[in-house]
Length: 146
Image 1 (cartoon, rainbow, N blue to C red):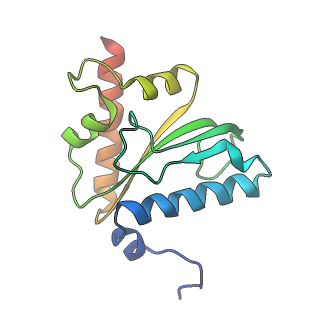
Image 2 (spheres, rainbow, N blue to C red):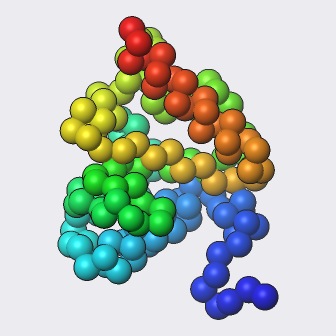
Image 3 (cartoon, one colour):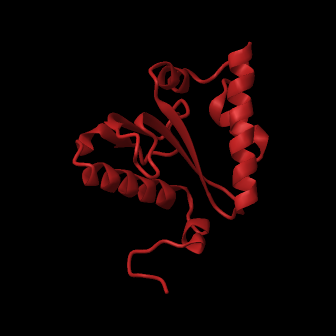
């Protein structure tokens, strides 16, 4: 049974870029409010065509380590509503065009101890999400090793 405000897999799969970004903004604001932290610390741009340096959103307050789905500390967020998101797309989100380093805004976030979160909406299956997570980790590891 689906409750009035429950979101299921099909709801997420049907989202296009603007609705996904709006949904994530609402979810992030709701979680920060639930934690009784300043909502002004949550910044999410709805101008999805504006160059953002790899971050659509930012949580600039300290999230407790025991939160069930928000990363502890500060975090930067990138939202993508796509049918397919291969490794080359993950690299394009994380790396500079020459693929020699992480985009400056993401690099600064990580240097300050923050967490980068790439949210992929659209028609995906769980094994693919696990594969994408591993590919993202490999990209970061490869750059850190150089």
